[in-house]
Amino acid sequence: MDILAKERKLLELEKQVEALGNNEAVNKLKSEIEKYKHNEMTKLTAWDRVLLARHQKRPTALDFINYMSPDFIELHGDRLYSDDKSIVGGIGSINGVPFTIVAQQKGKDLENNLERNFAMPHPEGYRKALRLMEQAEKFKRPIITIIDTPGAYPGIGAEERGQGHAIAQNLLKMSEFSVPIISVVIGEGGSGGALALGVANKVLMLENAIYSILSPEGYASILWKDASLAPKAAEVMKLTAYDLEEFEIIDGIIKEPLGGAHYDKRETFKRTKQAIITEYNKLRRLSGTELQYRRTSKIRKFGFFQRFNYDNLGGIKR
Figure 1 (cartoon, rainbow, N blue to C red):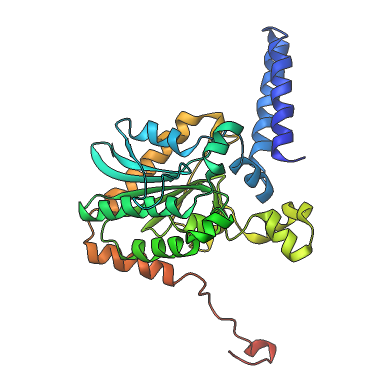
Figure 2 (figure 1 turned 180 degrees about the vertical axis):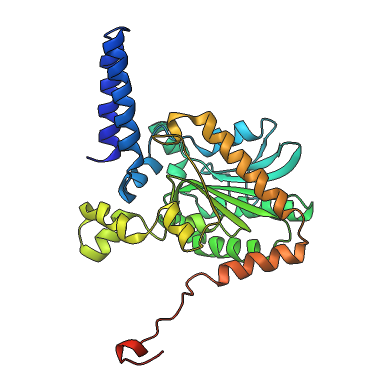
C-alpha cells in the first residue's frame, strides 16, 4: 500500500471516529489511530516520497513566497518574447532583507495547471529568471530560487526558441554571480529544467521533495521498457533528499510535518523561512569572489567518488 492509499484510509478512519462522538472508548481509538499514523507515515519508500512531492494539495512556490515575503512584487517578461507563467519572479524582503526570488509555479487545479504549463518552463521563462538574477547581481541583492518542476517543457516551440541554450545560459551565468544564491527544492526537481535554477551556494530540500535527472516513469521506460516499474526505479535512482544529502549534492534537509507538507503548511513555511535565513546569515559574511569560488567548486566535485582499490581482489588498480 503506497502513501496515498494509507492517507485515504486514515482520513476515512478519522471521519468515522469523529462521527462517534467523544467518550473514553472513542478517545482510545483516536490514540490508536495516531499511533498507526505515526508508524505508517514515517516508514516511507522512495516512491512514497515521489507521490508526496507530486501531491495535489502540496503547497506551491507562491504559497511559500506569500508567507515568507508579504511585500513581494512580481516582475514579468523576458524582454524578448513573452511572459512565461510557469516561472514567477520578483523582489521581496524576508526579515527586512531584500531578496530577488525566482520560482517555478505549479497550479492548484487543472485550469491553473494549464495556465502555468504544469510548472514546465519555456525558454522565455528561463530568460525571465536570468534577467531578474542579473538585476540582483547589479544591485547586490541575494537570490532565492524555489524549484518545483517535472522538467523543462519539451515542445517543438520551446526547442525552436532555444530551450537548451536558455538553460545553458542560466547554468553559466549563475556560476559567475558574486551574490549569495540559495535554492530550495519544494516538490519535484526534474532534470535540467530544475538545475537551471539550482546552481547555488546552498541547495536545500524539503524532506519529501525529489531531485533527479529524470522522472521514475521515464527511467523505467528507458531501462526496463515498462513505465509501471516506476516505484522500482525510484529506489534505484537515489532521488530523495536523504540520498542526495549523503552524496553531498544538497546541503540540508528541511523536515516536514508528519504525513507531508500539506498536513501543516504554515509549519512547513516557517521551517523553510528559518532555514533560508540561517544559510543567508552564513553566506553574507563571504566576499563575492569567495561566494563564486565556493559555488563553482561545489558543482565541479559532483560525480567524483573515492576510487576502488582492486589490489585486495587481485585485480588492476585504476
